Length: 107
Image (cartoon, rainbow, N blue to C red; front, side):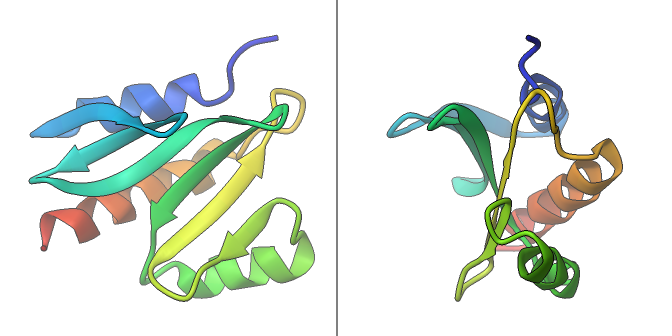
């Protein structure tokens, strides 16, 4: 099966002034030394962590509906889990990725 995180990684790497690295077993994407995305395979699924502010309410609603797929942390980080059979909707991850990148640029 195709890697459902690949399109997210490609888009993250296309923003201006992005550094890609690793953090534990996850790929990390930073701008200006500040992380905006952690993504990788974990436990047979994929995990992506985004920084959210304006979309936090949306993330909290998704976490209430499907807590195995979405978790909202106490800070700005939101975790999404997905698979090739059930990938993150492009519209959702694109919105969250854009927001996460912009929040990191403002630091």
